[in-house]
Amino acid sequence: METTQLLRGVLDLAVLAVLAEDDAYGYDVVRRLRDAGLEDVGDASVYGTLRRLFKSGALSSYVVPSDAGPNRKYYALTATGKDQLQSSEKSWRAFTDHMDTILGAGTPPST
Image (cartoon, rainbow, N blue to C red; front, top):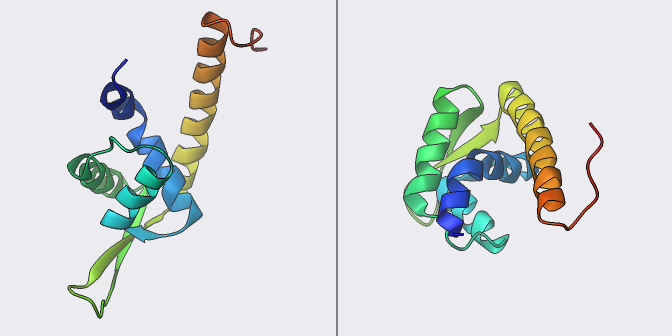
C-alpha cells in the first residue's frame, strides 16, 4: 500500500501530535514528521493541514521574529485541538487494534 494514501487519512492526527509536544512553525512541523519516519509527507500537505486546523479552531498562531530571515508563524494547540487529538488518537488506536487482529498480529480487542 502506498504511504501517501495512508498519510491522507492520518495527517491531521500526526500534525496535532507533533504540536502537542511543542509549538512549531510550518517547516519545523514538516521536519519533525519526517524525523519521526514519515519521509513521504509533502510540504504542501502539511501547510494545508495547518491552515485547515487553524480555521477550524484546533490551532492558534503567533509570530516570532527571526534573525535568519522573515518572521516565523508558530502554531499551538487550542483546547479544541487537544480534544480533537485525544478523540482522534482513541479512534486510531481502536482502528489499528482491529487491523492487527485482521492481519493476524494480535488478539481481538475488547470492546
